[in-house]
Amino acid sequence: MNRDEEVKTPDAAEEGSQGAGLYPGDTGRLPEEARRVLMQLLAGPSLDGKRHGKLWPALRRHEAEIRSRLAELFLELVLDDDLGVAFTRQADTGELDAPILLRRTPLTFLQSVLMLFLRQVLTEAAARGERAVVSSSEMMEQMRVYEPADNTDKSGFEKRVRAAVEKMKEHSIISSVHAGEDRYEISPTLRLLFSADEIAALNRVYASIRDESPKEVG
Image (cartoon, rainbow, N blue to C red):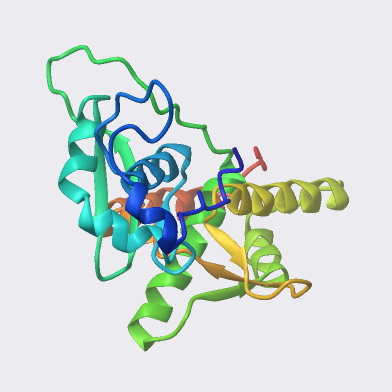
């Protein structure tokens, strides 16, 4: 399943059939629209009120049941009404040795600093009450401050930056504003992934690396 593709909701005519027994052998108890929300959350990376206009109200209607189903998988629902975004993450199970369902993908150095840059753009745009939009050239320019001064492989560095941008697309951190345009809107989900304190700490680390003329590692 494409992680960026919305699980389609049923038409109004189909909603009357929601509930148990949606197909032969079905023993589920959730109505159909709630199941589709659960599928979208598990497929990930997030459920966005703007992109998933039919699923968002279904999530709000069945939030308690969906939270319960996720808890059975040692997962928790992170939901922000103001931002209109929701996603799942591993629940904090304390001393309980719970199995891990969601696997984290480690980020390269360039992917990490690009994500921090996008988080900064998102914060500044939110303060102005504007959409957070960025272009490929702006991302490339920002990443150049982390290019080693003695780097002789310019094309190789640019290739790694483009790969970092593609990773942000893959995880729906950025999405095209219009088809064919080189402009991307930053998902508000990014505001939930890192706290302000975590951002400040990471920025201090990467600033020190940058100031020491780092060897490019991603």
